[in-house]
Length: 477
Image (tube, rainbow, N blue to C red; front, side, top):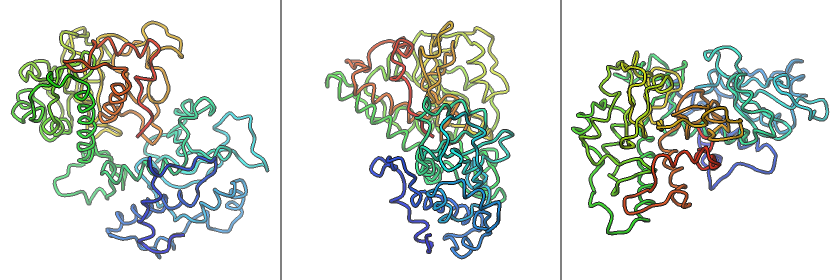
């Protein structure tokens, strides 16, 4: 076990990254996982106690069920394999809540939740619930489940998520090394997306309605690091497009995409993710940023196309902003689109079947809601995906591998129903969309000409025509 504050907090070599991947030999890296676990315990302890460094003696002296010598503990530990027991020997007690979605460490034998014909040897359970979802998220909670046969973990927050993770041989991409899940949580803390702090100790002027909080842990609608990383992803994409264009066709532009006054004219709210992004990101030096999606060089046209920023919205809400429109391609205001954009409003004051401009929108959010993502997006298409009664194996798919709902106009590139590192409803991040678009350009799936990316918005329908894997974003937080 780590014996000094420095050893607890110095985990750089334990974090999973491209240069430092998770173990892939089918075994549990229990020492690495214990270090990551203890970092989270110490981080929460420091926040709870207003300290800059963890008190090792205080952490070590916490009473912890799995270090007690009693029949119930021994009965449980006898059903765990040796690596999991070594992990328990090395970790500190996480006083609930352990993390934003997680109550604590439970080590509950959980075969009852799974249909499995591959029994473990020596009368051991195959599945163990390591961390339980917090009670605030309702009944039927599960949490991080560990497969002692494959030595992989998954995070079905509730029993409703079970069909996204089993049968395991059909959902292997949703099972990860435990260190990968723990690293994702630590990353959210480090960028400031998830922050610890007691409700009564919020910074002065920080409204509790601008965050979703479960006791010690808060989820922010966006953080400064997300602005920076999204701008970086967009500008990498712009460079990929511009490098494939005839040099003499590039527009002579070097300013940011929008000024504050131009966004005021379009009624884009103050102090929000999308305003910060649009006033800092470089203006693309071409006309089309994706098939059929136009760069808003005409600022007056940009303002005229906004349908939702001028509808009164609640104080803690941000309406959807049309970023890149498909000129002259409209879609009727159907129930799906009304529900999406009503998130920031009591209701969208438009009539059914009123025309709505299509294209790439920022995500409408109500900031106080649980699991919102202001740095997200929705691609509103002028046609339905998977129309009619496609078989499940046909057509566009989401990140969790499930088909986009038949008849959806907004489901392309989205997470789906299952978020493998926590959450249930939020939209996919804009940063991830542009990372995916970089791949489409670099592989030549999207071609580039003198006006930028070629093709019309109907090109996205290729997701229904056998290219679903090109139009799906890999699972992430």
